[in-house]
Image 1 (spheres, rainbow, N blue to C red):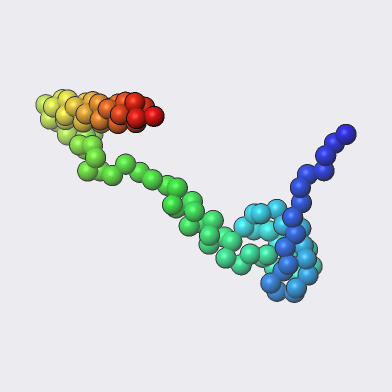
Image 2: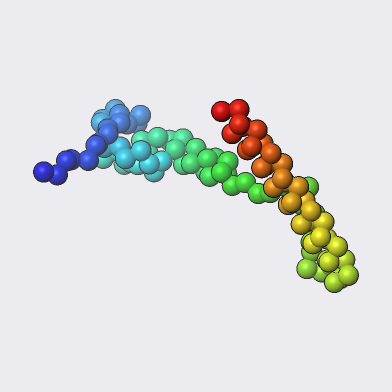
Length: 101
C-alpha cells in the first residue's frame, strides 16, 4: 500500500483562492499564477547569503601566489602553527566538555 505524500495548500494573497503549496519560494497560484509568497524569492536569496561563510582573512596568514619563494616558506610554517594551535584548543575544549558530561 503506497501512502500518499503529504500535501499542503495556501491561500493566495492576490485572488483569495486556495492552491497547492510545495513550500518553495517560487510556488504560484493555480488560478491567477501569482506568487503564493511574494517575499519568497527575497527570503531565499537572504538565506543563501547567510549560509555562505568564508574564513575571515585575519584567521590565517595570507599566502599570495605572487610572493617570492623565500617569503612563502616562512608563511607556510606560520600557517601550520596557526592550524596546530587551533587543533590543540579544539581538542582541549572537546576534552573538557566530554569530561564534564
